[in-house]
Length: 141
View 1: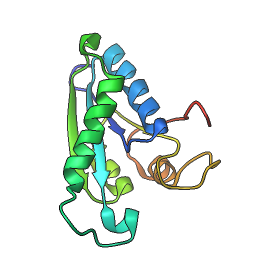
View 2: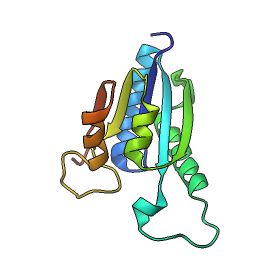
View 3: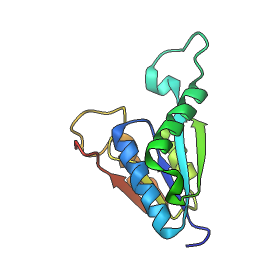
View 4: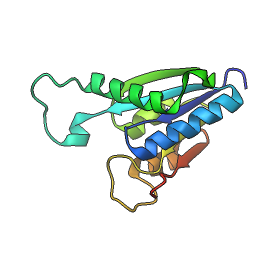
């Protein structure tokens, strides 16, 4: 699948880590490039204006590095790119998946209610993405 691209959304949750692991295996099997996407949006996520020196972009980038380190080992042969973007996760992933061969997300992220089969972001993406979407359930789900 030369030139193919798999996009995976990662938010640091265990469900997203499993989605990244699944996407990395799929990229290895198909030869697709893996685009690992993290979104930060303090206004929507935390409901207050942050003060001080907290760097949301850097924290998101570090979270992605940690998740990639857990899911993609050096010998896997997976070529990946990391993207950190400000915005609502659903819209960021929808935009990132434009023209992709596959979009992969966890079933529930850090938001939402425990016990839901699908989180609001994954539900939105399943109904709005213009490419196939794989929703990976967490082991505890």
